[in-house]
Amino acid sequence: MQLVEGAAALGVQLDEPRVQRLLAYVDTLVTWNRAWNLTAIRDPQDMLPRHLLDSLSVASYLAGESVVDVGTGAGLPGIPLAIADPARRFMLIDANGKKVRFVTHVIGRLGVGNAAVEQIRIEHYRPEQGFDTVLCRAFSTLANLLQSAGHLCAPGGRVIAMKGMRPQAEIDALPDGWRLVAVSRVQVPGIDRERHIVEIARLTGR
Image (cartoon, rainbow, N blue to C red):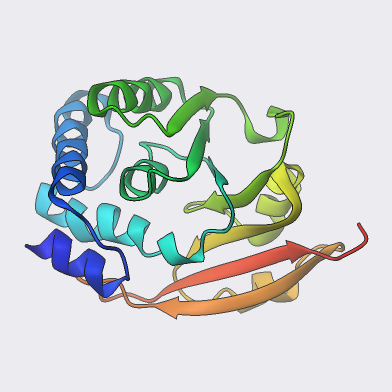
């Protein structure tokens, strides 16, 4: 199966229950997308690599027990990651009401007990504790991501941005108080275009 083999190539092992939940997520997304326009990708066969496998490509880069997915949209990458990794806790944040309603439905329907979602602007979200990993799949620039969501990163945590081509100009323009940890090129099965994962941390002592 494309999903199982593709996930294995990314270092993610999926048992049958996880596979069925991931496929059920795609089925639900396809159904809701007809009326709600949640994603520009409409073919479920395209969703496997471009949504599921692309989301799972960041799994090995997550740190700690708690992850916040900022600007999750239709639950990407947070829902696939939460299904694949039930030992971690995922908070999904988005300001778009219809997308949050969809994610709420998915969490309940598929029983994703280690995930929660909240409708709020990222800069207004003030949890009692920071997160070990602040994750973002679709954001304008690294500087904007850090300005809007940097406060969500716990001491010693990581901010991880999923990017297409290596964003060197954005890396060179990182704001004060942050340092580049690594930039990794990832090959997502079924996707020909470049994909990079950028890891950022606070400078120590801040």
